[in-house]
Length: 428
Image (cartoon, rainbow, N blue to C red; front, top):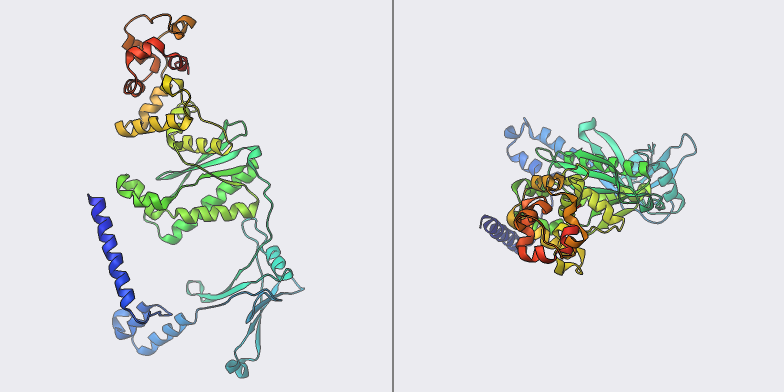
């Protein structure tokens, strides 16, 4: 009910804002921020002694940025153009001044600047490509007050398309998000895990800029690993807008992560960097990745749930199937699709709130009964196992939750009489 109440309040708030916008004849935009504009009415409270001091900051704030949209012509723009210089690899920015200012400053202002390479990206080469190909170059000039009022030039343009050289032929890196960590596993072409990493991610008590910077660093690490292994990268094609609409159904920690974690920015940053470095990016269906990882690989390789899910994501990108353990397979479900089996298991785990530690211990346990219990006559149903049928049932399934999963849909008598598929699974 609390989740429903908050959503109703949010809808009411949005309707109120929409009503105010419809009733507003003119939309007000304040260059320099409305906060600084309103500070002139309370100078002392905002740290100003005179109105002249406020006026200096106001004019400085309003004149700190200007830009020019690019155009496909020499120089890449109209009022702002870029041309290469022959010496020292520098470039020249030509600023065409408006007529009222030409008597005082001249017709043009010429500025020289250089372009530095960054994170393995040869940006000077990209700029040369845009200039020589007559690509539009959008130029933004802005001042950074926290860096001694220095002026910077920001160029946006097209770059040459880089062919994909790191593909799934050499394996795949699977990525899985968790509340505190981002799990990364490298899966070889044959589906076996080769390497894993857990990258910590701080999203609490961080500003938006700090979270984005941290996310970009993580993306750089992941793409570097893909370059090292010469493989592809796989992520889940998750729709977080749907997840956020159901936040009341999840845990508080997970809800906070969804709110603060800019998953869309992560996906866009990863896509951009993969394109720049020729890494194949594969988006896979996220269905049952966590459940499959916990049951099939968590105990087998000694992984946690996050790295196990990342392993499943990598294997799914390699188009490898995930079979359900035979001890969880009912005879009447043999011909069904694998995902129908995993759906039944996932629903059962969620319904009965089975902890992940139980799944780990269940797979690590060993059979209580010797191998001769699985003789050919016994498997074919022509013999009855010694002892109490329920005891044999528990021993073969290795964990009570597995017993409950089967008995909830299949009686013990049916299990003893015929379970060919059930008994063949007990050796896994």
